[in-house]
Length: 93
Image (cartoon, rainbow, N blue to C red; front, side):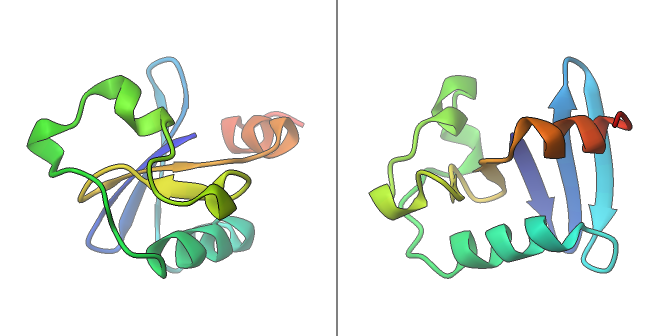
């Protein structure tokens, strides 16, 4: 799931033209943990202005992050979430 983090605001891209916005306080705990793990790794991505959409989905950092998520650019991330988590973020059950 693509995520954009600017300051303490998170934009989660949960569907086609469908986003959810959170801040540090309201971001779901499981996503906070994943973001902390991703942010603790050395950043080897590109600046936002050089990022292509498909680059978000490629883990160019560490194989250990394949099941967690990775950083694609200065503000864009990709988090690996279960189908159930994604449906929950969309407002489903």
